[in-house]
Amino acid sequence: MVLPAALHARPAGEVVRAAAAFTATVEVRVEGRSASARSALRLMSLGAAAGATVTVHATGDDAAEAASAVAEVLRAAR
Image 1 (tube, rainbow, N blue to C red):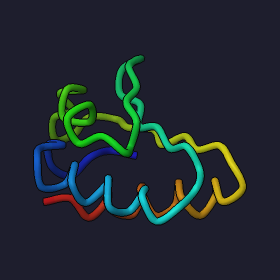
Image 2 (cartoon, one colour):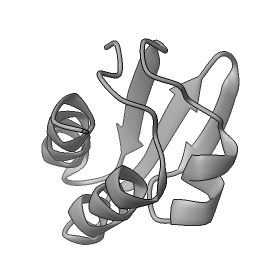
Image 3 (tube, rainbow, N blue to C red):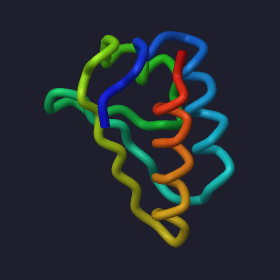
Image 4 (cartoon, helix red, strand yellow):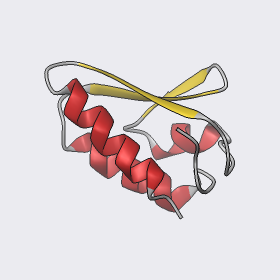
């Protein structure tokens, strides 16, 4: 997916809240680097600018739902 806005503090916090609702391990990947979706600081350290291509990867019992929820938050980022 392509980010509509940079992954700064507010959207990173929203991603963390979305990921916290699930038991799955969720990662956000940008340009070969990845960060846990449970850490706003690590997400921001990816330096994902508006227009960057981002991949959400999840593993665990509710992985599909977790990945979908995090991806939806990223799509709505402003």
